[in-house]
Length: 75
Image (cartoon, one colour):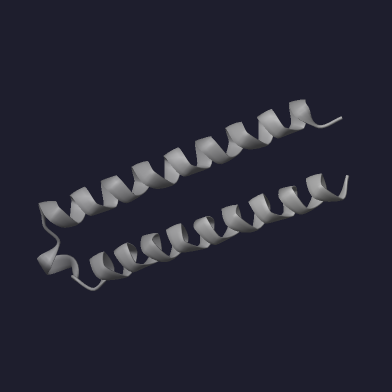
């Protein structure tokens, strides 16, 4: 039981760390685009925002899928 509990805690900690790093990258991208100002907003800025939106959406979907799977496995 203890090994399983420690393993689950470790995996959860790794996921939080990965999640934090990902959020930091997203925030950096948003800040970079926001500093352009409306007069300098070009196709690259729109592409960056679109890619960022897609990454966030994918991350959210995978998180929701993982939660659903874990709730089915849990006793």
